[in-house]
Image (cartoon, rainbow, N blue to C red; front, side, top):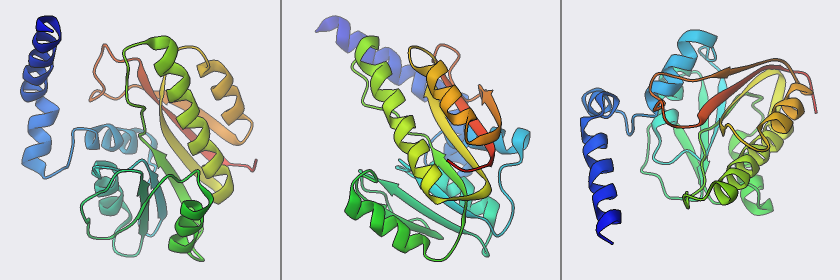
Amino acid sequence: MAKKKSSSQAWLKEHRDDPFVQQARRDGFRSRASYKLLELQAKDRLFRPGMTVLDLGCAPGSWSQVAVEQVGHKGRVVASDILAMDNLAGVEFVKGDFSEDDVFKKILDAIGDSSVDIVLSDMAPNMSGLNAVDQPRSIYLVELALDMARQVLAPGGTFVSKVFHGEGFDDLYRDARGSFAKILTRKPKASRPRSREVYLVAKNYRGA
């Protein structure tokens, strides 16, 4: 128990001292994850004003905050999560598991007649610390998000997802490559160096 408490205290200290955490507080972002998406935007030009964005696993809302700023008042952001999210101006939020039919329908209703230009996913499972458990769970979440992207993206659309290097990554990459003309992997500076997370940026959707 003492070891676990010590580990928790070390994580809290690292979190408090993290420059991206401190910057997020100053900039009014809900988490440091905003800077990951901002760096991807700077490198890959994901957003343009007027776009329609679907943000999966959005809570607490940091990626939605970035998306709203980037697409402007003529754009739209629809977001969904199994967790509740505080209201965010310009974001239509759907609570629930998007892989369930009723929640999927609510998301489609929120999207309406708009064509979705970008599907975002910064989802990660609740980590157990056991790679044999965590890695399949994380890959499964990306597979769900990719399946959703294939159902709602307009031709030429973009899919951006967090994914962890490890078993299943190569198969997932090959699967995504079959639907997009260009796929990149990125490691933003705001992603902690010790983390196995990278971001898959799949552009120019060609169809399932």
